[in-house]
Image (cartoon, rainbow, N blue to C red; front, top):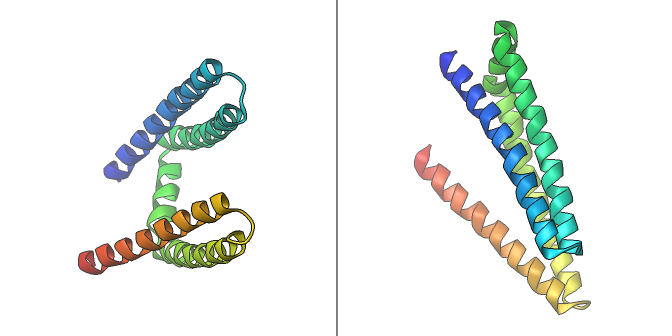
Length: 141
């Protein structure tokens, strides 16, 4: 249980660091570059992710104060059923994403070459990532 407590502390610290650094970097970029669509998108995206990181940091901080919450989080994270559901959802999600990107790529080839090459690169990266992770886990497990 002490290892899980340390994990929660690290999670809380990482969330706080992210909440501080990323919006500062995004605002600096926004001020430096000016108000352009990319800088506005970056600012909004970074602040959205920072909000999620803040929620995780707060949850971790609250859990660290009460032993019952630590135990409940530990059980939720180490439950074999929850882990199996997460693995299956991730596997299915990646396959659906790969299929959707492939269809979008085949349509985009007739509409816009830039979009086509972007989707092609994304599809190839996703497929390569799937293959490499499968090879890694086959050797590891």
